[in-house]
Image (cartoon, rainbow, N blue to C red; front, side, top):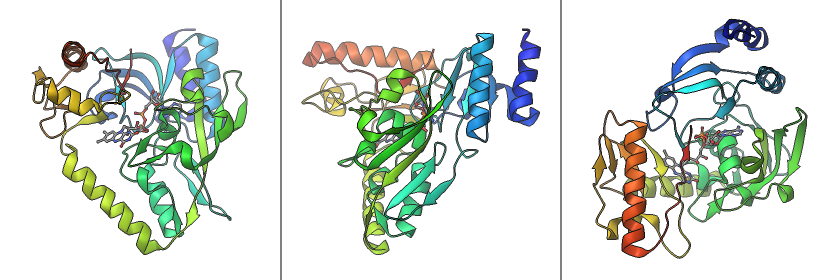
Amino acid sequence: MSAQEFEKSLQGIVGSQNVRPDVPLSEHTTFCIGGPAQWLVVPHSEDEVAAVVETCEAADVPWRVLGLGSNVLAPDEGLDGVTLLLADNFAAVEVLPDGLVRAAAGATNAKVAAAARDAGLAGYEFASGIPGTIGGAAIMNAGAYEGQFSDVAVEVRCLMPDGTLADIPASEAAWGYRASRMMREGLIVLAATLLLRPDSHEAITERMDDLRQRREEKQPLEMPSAGSTFKRPEGHFAGKLIQDAGLQGASVGGAQVSTKHAGFVVNTGGATASDVLALIALVQERVMEDAGVHLEPEVRLWQ
Ligand SMILES: Cc1cc2nc3c(=O)[nH]c(=O)nc-3n(C[C@H](O)[C@H](O)[C@H](O)COP(=O)(O)OP(=O)(O)OC[C@H]3O[C@@H](n4cnc5c(N)ncnc54)[C@H](O)[C@@H]3O)c2cc1C
């Protein structure tokens, strides 16, 4: 199948306006880094997602999923194949009886937390400032301030490798620290159901405001980044190790170890993925020399 024929098949599934060729990934990642996606495909239903993946598999075209791009470093040369965007095109949030909230994969954590608060449901405040989607939170087991996605999730709806849809109960999601079965098996998260607990609007708002303030004080939110660059090594804090190694403010090209929070690499303007990768390697080397600890990237390094 030629590239043109393949593009036509995609258009037949999602509509021609939802197949966007050569879209810079820098426009879809919070790092503001990344060359063009060959096709950015914007599906609006589970059936469309399944059909796009089936078409890619049949044509042997690589595909991947992007939420809000807040934990991704996309390559400077761009990406061949299809990047499926599951963001505000896929973002319904529904408050159900008995403390349940169901959100489509592209709903932002902020939107879900606000819907829960407005319904008098507590437990998702921890995620209100994590700038990603429900799909990204489920894949990464996103967490902050003593909370993590696996604490509140009851079920995750996924597209399985055989093309079927499955509702995976939390007990089978194998969540770990920034890890999940869905990540390991390359499943697409389409939706998730959370179980929250009743509380007053006022108390929930107060907790969300407090967490927002703590983030604003500590994190370089005014600069493009992908959040914490490295996972927390057991028994340590990545930021402290980096600071102790004398690397706060160290830079390669436009990539810099944040002067506000050493756990973040920020884009000071015009940083490339190569700059970020070189800075990550430098930090890993120096922290190993200084403290004997290996820092593993938390940011997903796309190739
Ligand atoms: C300023 C800042 C602060 C942050 N703070 C935190 C924090 O406190 N805690 C924390 O855990 N993280 C934090 N992060 C990182 C990031 O926001 C989370 O990892 C978030 O869960 C990623 O969601 P996303 O929608 O942006 O995913 P993306 O970055 O788009 O994708 C991340 C990975 O998940 C995959 N993916 C995304 N959606 C799906 C889906 N529906 N199905 C299958 N795979 C999918 C992608 O392929 C990719 O591999 C922060 C980031 C920033 C920029």
